[in-house]
Amino acid sequence: MASKDRQITREEVSKHNKDGDLWVIIDAKVYDLSRFVNLHPGGKSVLLEPDVAGQDATEQFYGLHRHEVLEKPQYQRLQIGVIAGEKPRLHGRIAGEISDVPYAEPTWLQPGFYSPYFTENHRQFQKAVRKFMDEWVYPDAIAREADGKRPSQSVIDKMTELNLNAMRLGPGKHLQGRILMNGIVKPEEFDYFHELIITQEFARSSLRGYGDGLLGGMVIGLPPVLNFGSEELKARVIPDVLDGKKFICLAISEAHAGSDVMGLQTSAVKSEDGKYWIINGSKKWITNGTFSDYFTVGCKTEDGFTVILVERGPGVETKQIKTSYSSVAGTAYITFDNVKVPVENTLGEEGGGIFVILSNFNHERWVMCCASARSQRGIVEECLKWVNQRKVFGKPLASQAVIRAKLANMIARAETSQNWLENITYQMCNMSYKQQASKLAGQIAFLKSYSTGCGQETARDAVQIFGGRGITATGMGQYIEHYHRTIPFDALLGGAEDVLADLGVRQALRAMPKNARL
Ligand code: HEM
Image (cartoon, rainbow, N blue to C red; front, side, top):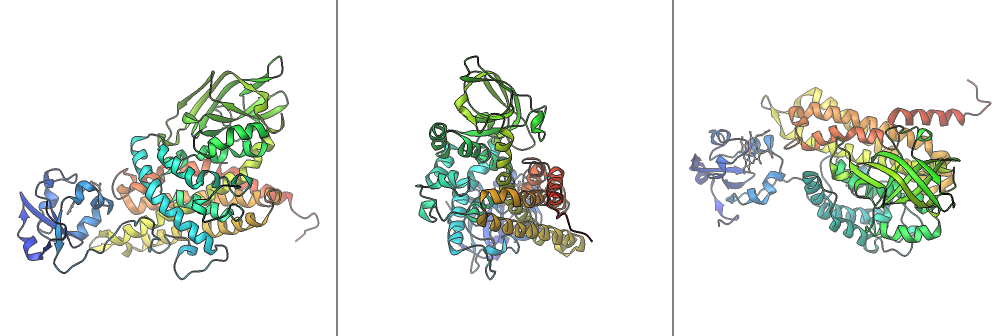
């Protein structure tokens, strides 16, 4: 086998310029494409063009392929040497590293910038989380998005080892006694900025279905158990879920009712001896439902609306719903047919379900704001790279004023979403849970509505910038296509965009001082 370090002159390469004997240079590396030419997905003729065969084809290559193509083992094997006296200098995403593309990272991570919020501990924590994501989560996300299976248990076990599952529920008693991220942060020091870091590093993988598949159901389904379950129930359920041995999801929405929680039809009726709930009905769009062992279910009861923890067993059926993102998320249609559940599984007061659900919302929406701000930034990075490397009419795409105008808006949206988010996160770190509920519900609702609206505009602009590639699931625009296809999820889950904006205004109107006049 040829050594990749073999030194070859440009003159030597130029002699191998025909069908059957074909070399090209890409970023100072020499590739022998003599046999690959017939297998090339882009066809044979493009490789035999006079400005490609035996020549330096770096610019043509990067106008048509992502860097990852060259990192695949089957293509790495085509490299037979490097140009004498030259060194490769181009790279794609470098695992674990901070990107040096402007605006690809929030300011607190950019060299030379300062932040009033993030401490040295947050910085150390971020490094460790990014390394973990790039080494473990990202490769699994790519593989599972391709085969549609749920996230690998090996990744979940590794997350358990670091106690990432527990940290995703935020600061609190559930962290006590746990070693967090190999001891980088003590349980009592863990704050919402640490949690923001975890969510944003997850979102950086840019694969939305996988992101939700990786225990998104736990993040929203376990807090009601944690905050409203009996001690016995908590002891039985929580450790296994936090250790990734059992899975849980939040089952509220139905084909009959979504945001309109009081219109739900799934019913829970007490058995004659009063020891059990008998549950009948169905739930729709339940994230992680296909593989969950526990279901935090909103039910209509005699007293109104009650939340009950149902365990998978006789009468519980789940089936996959095909949505516009991947099946990795395990989105389910669930039916409950005379399911018998001990009354001890009631979460909170009978008839007090609305309080259980509402108390969950602020955190859930804030988590979504973290993800939304970070994924917009990922799209900014993709677009900046593309307009810089893509040539049209002999000039980089970035030389077009209309393209730059789109970028200006995309960058401004990503920056405003992140900066507002950091401010709210700081408030959360300093307010009690009760203060958060009364003061931040409006702020968080507005931010989610604003941020997911920004995401949709950015998705549309990115598709315009990438053209046909922005609607193609493989190749240069694959992340743009994925983002554009999955962005509506952000704007719907946890409260639809317009509903949230209106909630924020209604909260403000309620807080208007009685004596304020123009
Ligand atoms: C080591 C060298 C090369 C390898 C391994 C390679 C591999 C590939 C692969 C895997 C694709 C499918 C699309 C993707 O996944 O991005 C592709 C598409 C393509 N390649 Fe190459 N390629 C090489 C060099 C070149 C060169 C030098 C040209 C010169 C013009 C070229 C022109 C194209 C074209 C036109 C397409 C179709 C792009 C599209 O559908 O948008 N390739 N190549």
